[in-house]
Image 1 (tube, rainbow, N blue to C red):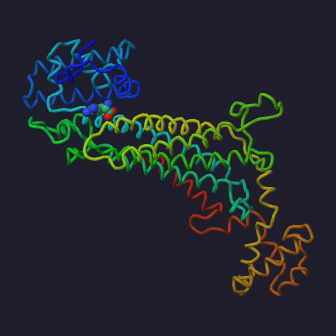
Image 2 (image 1 turned 30 degrees about the horizontal axis):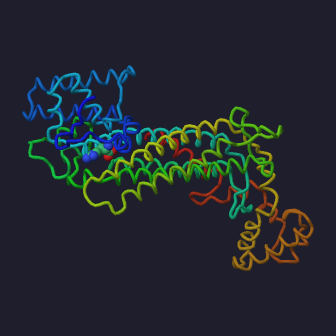
Image 3 (image 1 turned 90 degrees about the vertical axis):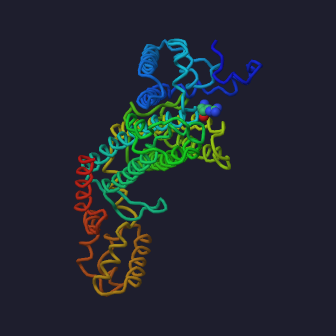
Length: 460
Ligand code: ARG
């Protein structure tokens, strides 16, 4: 086993328990490819700046490429005695090309190495989230278009409130997931900053060309403060905050799917391929997929809080505490990616029960606001109209009927202003389609928004 790169000032062998406790290789091996990429860029720059020779650089790069091939072939052996991914790769390089490997670490520290690795990795993952969300948004828009004529109850306090179009309800999630995508895109600007060249914390005496390294690695800019660059994890925290918000949206969608699939609602059903059964109750068909989406939200929130807590009060610059950023980050990324994927598939496995939705929208006086608005149209102040329509609701409850089933002379007892035309305003289509303010549930408005969304998705 190779000596530790830092063994110079040590006279005792590291305690095995310490090796195991400090090792992060089981986690950060995931960054290996990015570590190699960062090293190659750093190496090219060292040669360009004449800090090392072209031959030395060629040997290092060749060695690195061979290591990557070993990884591809599953031949690379990671060792926990070598602590982390950076030291494992450096040791492998030394084994392969000899002492010249030691020149790679000129003007560099693991502190900026880990920062660059995580940034490169997270940049790619964030891009994947944006793409995944885009595919999901496409599905939502298509589903909305397909169901433009389905009317359902809109709820407040989980009480039936006013009829809405299912498409409008679905498009609300389109808006949420679009903002999530925007948040990730915005976060990318802060992820995509190059920290290499900070060395351990203070910068370095070698004439490094940081901008060149940034251009090789596709970074948009270079960090402006070496101490900040090695000790900043707010780009990770920001990502986790964005991921948490996105999971919160998923959990709301999941919750609605669970409710809607219940016998109490019966608004939707899941295909058999997207449900599970009970080991004891033969009749059960359970919505485990949305339940797990809802449940996994906690893991992502947990990751955010874990890292906020880890970073709280850490003195500048790097501290080993920060190694604890990766397990929660990796878990959150995997969880969100899985939810985006399964969430989109879930939508393909739902059948809408339009009859049940319509029936629920038609019962329970969801058109009472329209009755009040009708009286406003006849010149009454809204407050008065509200009270009169409320009286009509009470009468209908008493009779066990709907508002439109009250006879005109009954209505006239509440107000002289009621006339035959009141019945025209109480139908479901009419009730939704007169809500034609921008952003409202009217068929025309929802179709406009769907068209805008389709165009946005096309151009994005
Ligand atoms: N494994 C470390 C991490 O993930 C890399 C940086 C270690 N730096 C150090 N000086 N021990 O944070």
